[in-house]
Length: 426
Ligand code: FAD
Ligand code: NDP
Picture 1 (tube, rainbow, N blue to C red):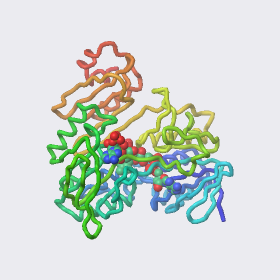
Picture 2: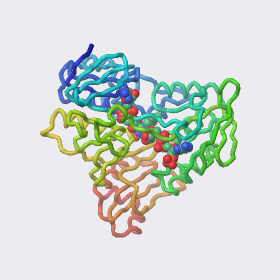
Picture 3: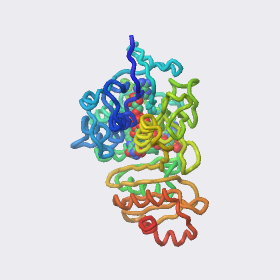
Picture 4: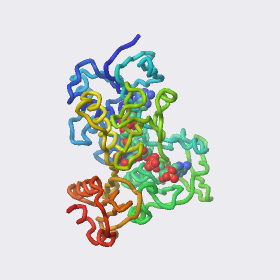
């Protein structure tokens, strides 16, 4: 039993949704495109899961955040896919792939063949067990990657109003979930191994701003240590968190955000891998010319840095998807993907954006005791990165533009004096 398509997108997340819209814009014919996803719903804006989805009132629920609302584009509901003749195979995993025969075998036993495959399998959340701690299956231990996880997190949160939560991990999931838990009136202790939160992006000074704000909202921090074990009650629920530094915390619930691993397993030994992802060229094409990779799973050349990187953020998923489809449908009109890395987050009433790279010297500007401040990264005499908290749309556009231009910086003191004005006028 099997079906054949010209184009198959494997994975039904953010990148898949944006790729589908681009296929339609470029004139894909009815019956040519199929999307296979093990999630039971059409592609949606995953970032909503740690933000609007967790609000205590007027929480976001599907269909309101199907792709591509996050980029002010059409909202693609299942009806939209139907109307455009796109086959959505949902709730169905792909268990093996054969890139030589150009076939995929699904968990329902169907073989789906393709002429061109776009791999958009994203990533999975790392489990505590991978760090030698057991307890991930306990009913009050939550991860957050998909809708099922988010529903579970909401249920657990609602089961312990006014209760105590421990959030493990000081990255994006940790920061955003802590804010949502506090908004839901849960008391939170945040535990992470580094000296400060968001260690891979924030400098100690920037991190301090957010940590102080979180403290003012009642959040406790336990830094520089990791979980060593959980205590359980007779029903298998976690009641205590034991840390390696000897601290013991009583809990009603635990949220874990300790990083991800790209879903490359189906292609190991078949495609070239790099930086934990599928290595692609500037057309998002892998070592097999019929296979493209986009989103979290793709390791692509970032021109500005002159090296291959794998990015785990929604903007790169959206733009790599768009570019891959252009490269497939209009190869003669499509150049190499030229992407400026862009990360952002929104927590409580705070909101920041970052463009570029965090290498070199850092120059801060603005009022770090107020609501708007920023930083520039200068490497080899050029501006290579820019961060801004509390900016307006125009100011964010200005720091993005300035970073893309990589202007020469001769005088760091003058840059500090000019602050945001430098980006606005460059
Ligand atoms: P995904 O969106 O993860 O989609 C992958 C899809 O493939 C999933 O549907 C998965 O089920 C499916 N799949 C995988 N393997 C198989 C298989 N074998 N068979 C069938 N289907 C399969 N980024 C930001 O920049 N800003 C944010 O604010 C932000 N917030 C986030 C909040 C949360 C809670 C999470 C989890 C991530 C957030 N991100 C954010 C990151 C962003 O969502 C990802 O970078 C983006 O979703 C990547 O898109 P993708 O399509 O590559 O992968
Ligand atoms: P991150 O990589 O952002 O952060 C993981 C954090 O957990 C790091 O602080 C890491 O420390 C720490 N950690 C690692 N191992 C342990 C351990 N054993 N015990 C305690 N802490 C540990 O991943 P997240 O899980 O926060 O996010 C998952 C994905 O979702 C990422 O791809 C992220 O980009 C994405 N996301 C993005 C958002 C955004 O862009 N606004 C919002 C939410 C999610 P170390 O650095 O030392 O490894």
